[in-house]
Image (tube, rainbow, N blue to C red; front, top):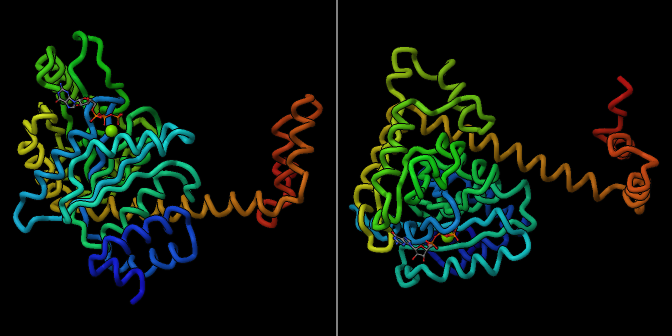
Length: 347
Ligand SMILES: Nc1nc2c(ncn2[C@@H]2O[C@H](COP(=O)(O)OP(=O)(O)OP(=O)(O)O)[C@@H](O)[C@H]2O)c(=O)[nH]1
Ligand SMILES: [Mg+2]
């Protein structure tokens, strides 16, 4: 039986193997992705992001268990992404994932992912993993990533629903969460609500949301989507009244408190997306990005592979000794490639 067929029939060993092959972009992995793709498009992808140590893994753990209680016992895949540390990534992820106590449930599959060697970057890799899980019949895909910069924005952009996890702040104006990350949230969670200041944080976040703090100026993909939605895809009568207002919830992930409410909001958001065609639009946008990122990855890799030996080193030497500027070196390098042959200055 082919590997992808085994994946679809529920073999965890085959699933594991395909994920490794996909991670390394081997021909077997790419072929499996190709064969599995017709069976994708059903899973609900949920991104969970927030500051380090805010309790994301604990929340994901509790959330997975709660989702399993839903009618039909939906299957849950968990992807733990570490965009921050290309070097120690593997080891740290190992620690993070070990804390999950879900290993015994055959309806749950956990996979970590470090940044090294991802074709087309982490977001493209995460999407590739999601496709495998989707085709394997996982209904929910939980993607955990540390909210530390631009990369998590990219990663959560492929999710249908983004949950931003915050913790009680130290005071009214000191929030661990960066304002920029608020705008990507579909659902906001104040975790560690057993600690002082939870209600204050809740009020703060709610007021931010109510003030309409959803600036559309960011370059994040979701906003490109929002723009295209507002322009053509959604009838004027549905917009902006029909916009989703992110709910703000309190949880104590360690004690599984507030998780039922979180699941209710997730399902509400799913319904909202489906009722307003945003589900399909998000899919279309994610897949377009996936194709774009892959092309980018392949072209860049190819570009460096076909450079004659030593050329890059020679130019670097010139740059370091200030005999040539990096800009001029780039221009020079581009002339070695079929596609970029023409000097950028010479138009
Ligand atoms: N008091 C309290 N502690 C919690 C709660 N949820 C998680 N924690 C603790 O917070 C610490 C960090 O939890 P993690 O789930 O590893 O946090 P994380 O956000 O996944 O951490 P990174 O992945 O390293 O960024 C652990 O010691 C948890 O036990 C909570 O609701 N209340
Ligand atoms: Mg974690």
